[in-house]
Length: 232
Image 1 (cartoon, rainbow, N blue to C red):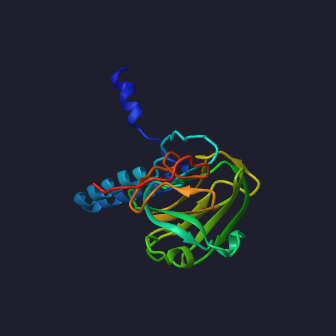
Image 2 (image 1 turned 90 degrees about the horizontal axis):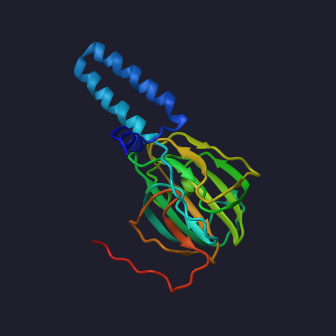
Image 3 (image 1 turned 45 degrees about the horizontal axis):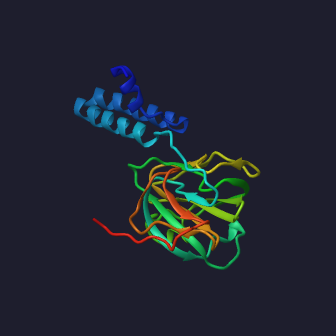
């Protein structure tokens, strides 16, 4: 492999949603540079960060039936049983839920946690409190997807955070997706909740680092008694 090929493999594509923001950062940097060069250099660093934020890397997704993959990059901030948002139509009984928090340094392209048909997309306006808090699932602006999978119905909810002010959905109701397909994006820090039927057993713990479309967060066809974890 040539040096040029090696460099190309390290360059991560930028999602088109980010082009306008990168352009704005670049123009502001040029204006700041004309006012005072040190400000221009700060703007240049922020422009590079903006391009990094909107990166859209290729992911390798396991495809076995029953696997639930992380819909977002970040760390697991909540695992347990919670009542899903009413607009999803998943009932008022608690369901298994895994929540993944994304910082402003994580990739913010969100992916389908399971393969199936999107039967509902529901947007609800709300607040912008810290997405790391449990109350964010109830109070914050959010956009939810319901997936009809082979082993039941799943929900994935994009939740705006303290900085995020825009949730973007790429998919539509009626679309059929595979696990790991891109379904949306949240700009500048946020969280995604995954609601699962009882057959899906969580395989992650608080603090687990996840990669969207690659990390298996639950399995609906478990063949063992689960997993234990240590921090180190």
